[in-house]
Length: 65
Image (cartoon, rainbow, N blue to C red; front, side, top):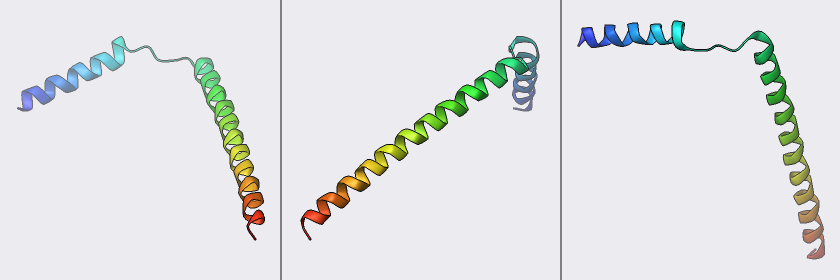
């Protein structure tokens, strides 16, 4: 059992060190900006839909009062 765990750890280390391609700082920064912009756009869209439904429901409730 311990031999299997040891083999797994060695193979995992070998893959992370020798076979994995890590992004450069510039690629990572560009990806972070893209995620940030997309998050802001989605948040604004959710805010707009929420505000629209709020005003629509206030209008509908005012018709019945």
